[in-house]
Image (cartoon, rainbow, N blue to C red; front, side, top):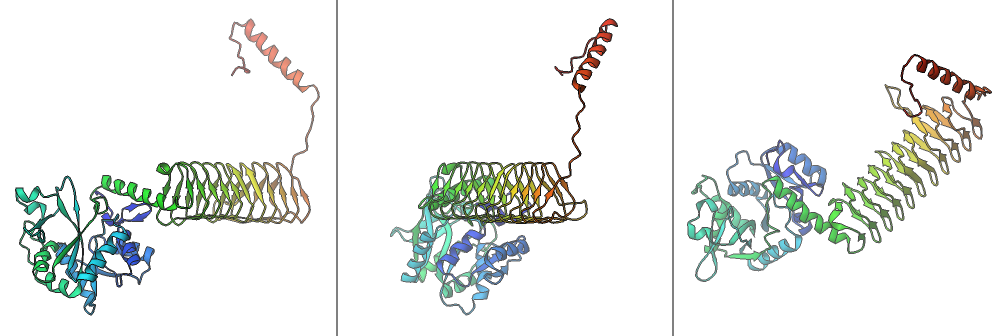
Length: 463
């Protein structure tokens, strides 16, 4: 990957690679789940804990990278008393489906054999080849670097995914030895042992499902497949107008009758509730959009709560801590941060509301800002129910505007406004009669003098 991060921490569709096999194993009912980790074990363990809970996974460290056979041997150590079947997955193979693995597990449960996934690929370079006998049964797997020219021509390859009885795996991995070009313990070497004892069966899988991730191009290719799957799932009950342009993370929930337009990105644990509409180009991260709400074009929201029937945007920015009750309007070029707006309140144009609590049915005029930061600390503004904040007002926190109070346009409010009062802080308007004519005459005299001296005349109107 040419990265400072462990490969399995690179993300597709908003989740680290390692989370996909773990989530699929959980869906199958696997327990316990053992993760054998090496490189950046602490970082990978924390990532798993964040997604699945600190106590849901047993972590085993493979201190020396001594091959897949050694990794499985290490992973079996916590399962000393386990007598069921063991499913072996890889942390960099994210596209395997629950349906495919269920076939694998069911085959093992029915037969008691070692069961493995295989695939037919047109270019098998890099894969272990499935070597079958004249009776068509699997005899062994030969790794690409150890294969003969005839074996390299085999197009049926090992997907690296196995399921087998725990007792067989303990015995088979204990007998492994590093008789190969790499000097490692190959898990594939258990196949001849299985062929001679419990038997070997295979389940064929589309090559796309078994694809591993070894570079960033493969990472993006896998993400394209995963996102198409996610979108197809939600299109069972929601409308995605241009699904090829819509990006939905694995942790997102989309409820029935939602409509999503083109170039939308839904990230993290976002939830879009029934009947909501998401306009072109919106980017929503860890945000709840309530039932029947409309989020208009190019709105950005992070860690926000948008209530039912709200109308947001276009070009609104809801920063973390924004909580909007039902029927709130937040319009174009309005930014909110750590702010709550009560039911029916409106901030329709060009406003900034930071560290603010707004009551119900409040009107915030265009150009209003809450001055919440004094260079050292953030302070809160409170606007009570029914207040009217005139355009181009500045509310200097900490300050409270009482219920049904009016702040006149252009006011700078530094003191609490009593309930039902009118607050005005304007300079008195003055008129200077005849000023326009005197100003024009002064500039005419200046131009005449410049012309007499042969200097160019500056045309201020054109400039």
